[in-house]
Length: 608
Image 1 (cartoon, rainbow, N blue to C red):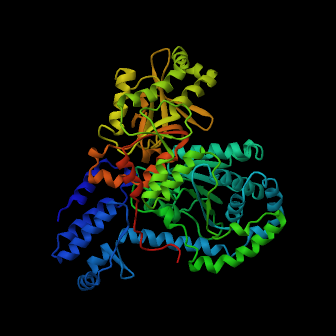
Image 2: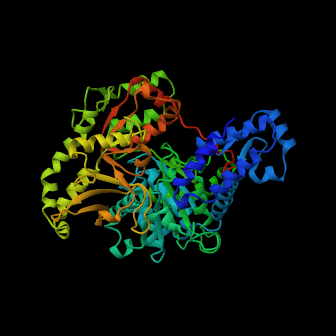
Image 3: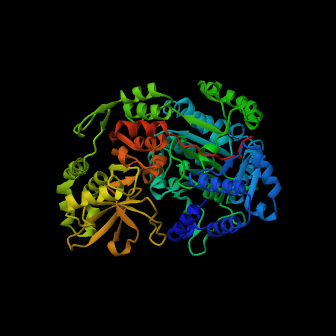
């Protein structure tokens, strides 16, 4: 027995931001005090097992041993009940996590039960049909179904991989909602500033011919922390149960990135009486779950056989049959679940990227791995500009990483030099050049499992800067990533910028938001690091033209690293690419990664 997890937690506490510390210190102290009591060894072992599972992302421990259940009953006390919960005589929790789950479930059921109060699809049938008839040739059946369910429900999850049209659905759903209710406020959000800005750009592009600029301004994009009004110096959110959010529609993208605590804060800030907002979640259930504990997107997807689905299914079928007849399109064949829709038809990724990512997720045995290999093209180095397959290199070569970046930078050498000869105020007069430089430097990315080590983010970035910029950072033309939220300057963890130098030799951090560029002098920027290479976790919510994925060599794979090598992390990396994927991985490591699957235990079910 040791206190490795507790010691690690206390060390992490020192570097956590204020907004991540909510009740965490007290939680650790309570556990430590309880473990110092005289307890049966099997109980201590069980608590350490729970701590270990928590570190891996689970919320509880699934107990299948009747003897340990009997021992728990013997030692239960008020002190025990303050810290732990035994749910259904099977799932062993820390009370903090159980109460968070219970809170979400209660509020989720309040939203679901409101669906029977009124039917927007019946009340506004003629207006909705008029709007949808204009979209028949633009959307597939599942996308149309998503819009109908988004209008009818107070809660809906829309899942799908990249290019399946989640943001397209979100755009037209918002468009029809503003068409029906022009005075209503709409909030769109995502875990990172980058993801929320990208969501807004997609919505604006899709609706530019439908909504005026004034109407589009009613859509308010922001990070989830900004949506909830996080106050860092008070260590709390402005919007909560006593002071709920004032939106009629809240749409959240990249929900797989949300942890249990943030989701509970969101559900707590929703009003459940009077003008209750509709909540629409977008995400990819196959992506990595949050870095913190929980598997919230998967948990929010109801099983088709749940009693909640069976209770509601006939009402929805009746309503949809009307729209099916009027629109002359087979909606009922696609309808299985009123609160969850999975989009599967991809319109963006190249065919070989889509097929590769699908096979990763559906892997079952060695035969599947051989089929996955057939989608890869073995090469010694990434020479093809437009391969029709994913290029696979088994031997990592640091120089090739450098050359991957160098070939891209050479495309904008002249433009970068032109900007350096201008005053900063002249850059916006040459927006075409600025756009070209910014897009070129931010549209290719090296994605790593690890942050440290020879094949980690830090060493790869250092090597590239040493070789191409003589070791000088910042330098003009180096992309960088914000590593902590900077509320004063409205810069958020995951935001990507580039460094530019003006004709006065002053460096500026350049960021792009919507169609606008923002420039920050170097001395204003606080938390940043180079981003030629970033971790796969950091890449979530972003997309790039070309990516290079680095898996560590087998000799460097420790037991701790092995836990990170999962099909979800590889799927997440591959699906960041719009055009080209270059994969550095030894065959054994690649096979191990695809075979290994993240499994997180949640215990309590939101839908029963």
